[in-house]
Every structure is written in structure tokens, then in C-alpha cells.
Length: 415
Image (tube, rainbow, N blue to C red):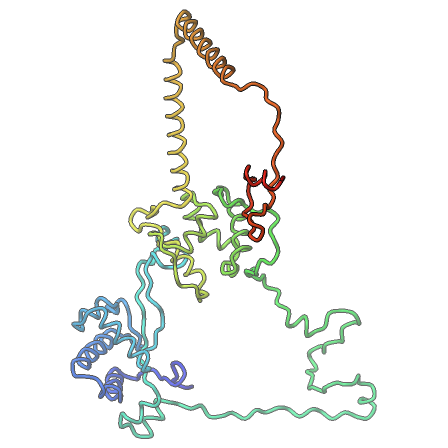
């Protein structure tokens, strides 16, 4: 069996040999002395907290905070040295660290799974290419990398058949040795399912996968109505999958589970689209690449809108802003209506004698104006014929401008 941890890596047989391999790495010589001092302290902190399988153990203090404090470096420096060791092949990450808030299935920390904070675990490995630099002989190298001996494959020869047996056997066939205590398989009847199909068919219940919703749902949920019941939220998620190509990678039930906090806060479909594409301060999200982990991507974007301590929204939703402005407008209209009704209630009619004197004065003024217009109009006069514009000659060689005829010129022309 090969002592291979992954690709061209082997598990370190001892802590001393692993530290020697790290120190003999050719890239160490290109760094400064303070870099190697921090790297050596980080590697020693890792080596002090491994179990018999050469894997860091959290119960031995194999957490970032404990190991960084033991190495005398900050958390950022410790993370940088771990990244360098993993890229060079001296560490192989077995499990990833996680906390309750960002662990799948906990609804952003609202559901306690009882695991607490899980620390990452690393295996101490050595690249195969780094073994010759450690000064080991061939026997020690063979002990580290054990190559299994190839085993010959033996197959029993097929028994010979007579001419009559070959004639009776169906063709084409492959003659295989059959145990006398076992009943050989018979050929299936014509029209039935083949043996290959029955053997390869998976009878286990398959989990339904999220397929792209190419067809329009039977009922489109309104963009301005908050879904309350589970069936209504499922219909709303079906419309989201139909209209958003990115969300088609999730099923409607998974999308409903991820958007449950928003629906519980009173969000509509328009609010959900705004939350996914905008930050709480109103800035749009400029990253438009397709997400690699769609569940984590959506959970992160929804989680940024909620406060970690109180669990409330950090900013009001667009529908809440519109509803607030609508309530303010209606309150102003109601106040204006009340003020107008109050003024109408205070209004009184003037006395009748005052109205009669004012009406008489207005009639007298109107009659006087009508008489003045009639007296100033001219008497009927015969209508005058319009005069046509025509060119008149003056001096015999110069054409006078167009205009009404001059009296003297007209008399001269007539004579």
C-alpha cells in the first residue's frame, strides 16, 4: 500500500522529519530571517498539537487562536504561513473550520446544532520530491514509500465443447465455467427487460434536482404582495426562478428555506430582488459573475441585511419606504380635508338687505356701461369698395412702387 496522502504527498513519519523537510525547502532561502523565524515558530506550534495519525487535534489546542499565541505571531501572520505550507505541500487540510452562524442548516445561527465552533484540522505531509534533500538512503525511502508487488491475474481456461454441443448452443455465446451446484441463468423471454438493464437500474429513491424552469408557472405571484403561507411562498419562489436565471440552480423549496427570514420580515418579491442586488446602504453589488456556491452566495447576501445581535433588518425595505410615504401623504390629505371642513363650518351668509343693495348697484353699473357703448357706435354708412393695388407710371420710364394711387397722378393719367 502506498503511503500517499494526496497526489505526490506522503504522511510525515515523524515530527522531526517533517520539520527538517520544511527547513530544507528551497524557497526558504529566498526569504528574510524574520520570515523564517515566524514560519519556524508556526510549524513548531502545529507539530506540538498532532495525534498519532499526524493530524492536528483541537482538543490538544489545535486552534488558530491557541497556536498563533503559542507561536508569538498575529492571526494574519499565522494564516499566511498556513497558506504557504499548504501551497508547498507540507500541510493537507482535512476539515474546514466553521462557526455556528455560517454553518449550513443553522439558519444563520438561529438553530443551535450543539457542535459549537469547529476548528480546522491539518495533516502533516511531505512532498515526494522533497525526500531526496533529507539525506535518506534507499532503504529508508522504500520504507516511506512502499510499492505493492503486482499480482498475476489467473483465469481458468474454458472447457472444450464437442461438435454437437457447439451446434446446440446459441450463437454468439461465451463459454464460462459453471458450477454444478448452481443453476445457470436462463435467457429472458422476448419482449421483457434485459438483464443488463435490470442490473444497472438504480431502484433507490432519487432526490429531485433543481432543473431550469423553462415554462411559465400556472400562477404568477404578485410583486407587491408579501407571501404568508407556505404555499404562497412556494408560488413566489417559482416566479423568482422563472424570472431570474441565476436562481434557477436552486429548487423552489430550497429557495423558500433560504428566503424565510425575508418573508418573515414582510418582504415582497420586489424587496427580495432589491436585497439580492443591493447592499443595506443602497449601493448596488458590482460583482456580476455567476456564483460557484449558490447556497452560500444567497445566504451571505441575505444575511448582510440582518443585524447579528438583534436579528432585525439593518435598513428598511423599499416596500416599507413606499408604504411610509403613502401613509404620510394620506395623513396630509386628511388634515387638509379636516381644515377645509372646519372653514366651511365657520362660513355664514350675509344679511338679505345688504345683498339687495349690492345687486341693485351692480345692475345700475351694467346698464350705464351698455348705454355708453350704444351711444359711441357710428351710424350706418355705405360700404366702401376696396381699392386694388396697381402699378402707376411716373415720367414714362420709371415704375413707381406698389401702393394706393396718388390723387394727382390719377387725374393726370385720366386726362
